[in-house]
Length: 323
Image (cartoon, rainbow, N blue to C red; front, side, top):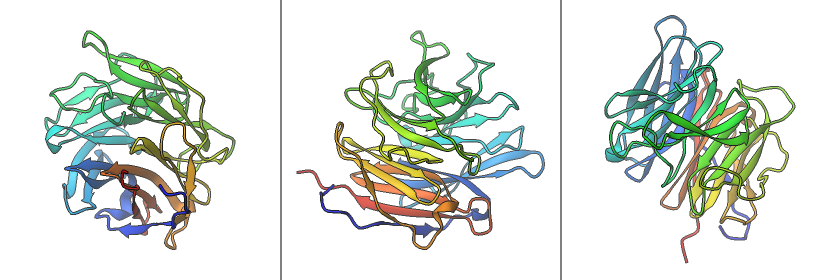
């Protein structure tokens, strides 16, 4: 981006077909265009289920219901989505089991349901996300082009990346370190981990407060350099991140602001960008997500989740054109 201060990122509402029940958002790229995914969990009485539906933001991509996830317990599951070859969606979902949560992958094209954590039946996994970017590793897949490695938090304390065993067996864990939420991005010369470390304070919407730390990792996901603190020691609740033309964009919710940080290249300093909430109250924000497509950044956040006033707010801005 230019050195001159950018104008505030302006959030605008996007219509959600099941807004009063919306509880989570994700952004995915389909055919090079951003598509907003939202979930609503129906938990008043069995059978419990979570529906995921799509809203194309650039006029291309699916619209309406794209997945239904049956569940035994009424908990709101955390989930992530990624595009497979051919435009199908794959999902990784947190399955509540009482004291222990498992992770499963649901592949949209085949409908196949695959356990990712059967190798550790007594550990509790939460906050699953596909590792983003090329070279992100591979889990046992029903077909070529299905997204691979998945990051998660074990026992609410330690981040790991789940990949396939060398012989094609069950998953193996690559520890990343102390985290209560994590996003991992593949890249060269190695991956980048964006971790939320626990901090004192009350939770909001089920999310504990924490501070954001960014670290380069080696090919085995071990540390490969000093950590960065894009927001200093400001406490945040939820976060997301994506690669941006060799750099990184991070979005996070805090007590009174939607925080957005941009690093134009590895080793460069992060800059926190101003956000215009468009009259909405950032104290009601949850489920932030960000996606970079064709040098355009799209971010979304949910306001007043699971209320009659629930709505998604979206902003886009271009990265500088290449020289």
